[in-house]
Amino acid sequence: MNGTEDEGKPAGVSRTGGRPRRSRQALLDAAAAVFVESGVDAPVREIAARAGVGMGTIYRHFPTRPELVVAVYRHQVEACAEAGPRLLAESATAEVALRAWVALFVDFLVTKHGLAGALHGDNAGSDALHAHFVDRLVPVCGSLLHAARADHHELPEQEPALNGYSLLKGVGNLCIGAAGDPDYDADQLVQALVSGALSPGRPSQGCV
Image (tube, rainbow, N blue to C red):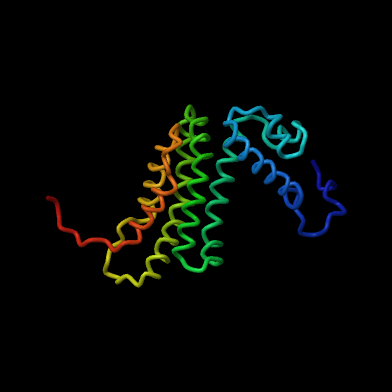
């Protein structure tokens, strides 16, 4: 393949930029929504209908379902990570930003758990995605938590009750209980956990 295919294009415009990139993002948004409603085994035609494209378009971007699942997972992680700084900049206080981001993370977990189940048979792939999840989201959560604690004027020598990793882990564990139980209010419990995370840590007393 030679370079003549790009002749006539404005300088600085890549083959992967612009409309193709936006189309790919639209497909990932549509697939994520369908996965939440119908599961990761939903027919491709359902995703195509949601995105307003033909099935061939989806297969050109994602030739296999595992490739689509991985792409949606990463897309969701990135969207959640990017929301943190935006919420911090737009919210009235850092605590408001933290609580809004945690609520967004709870919504993300609905899709994430389904994707994780679909990838269960690929240990190497699952491990890589989990590492990506931790690397991207723990620093965001930690930054929001630190900013919210600073708003509470806590003393520097006070250790936080929870760090970013522990808070995310706790949210994930609380969300598991919501499966199949309509009376289980994960959002309420998660916000209570955030309140605890913003409380001053207790001095270490050692093992009892």
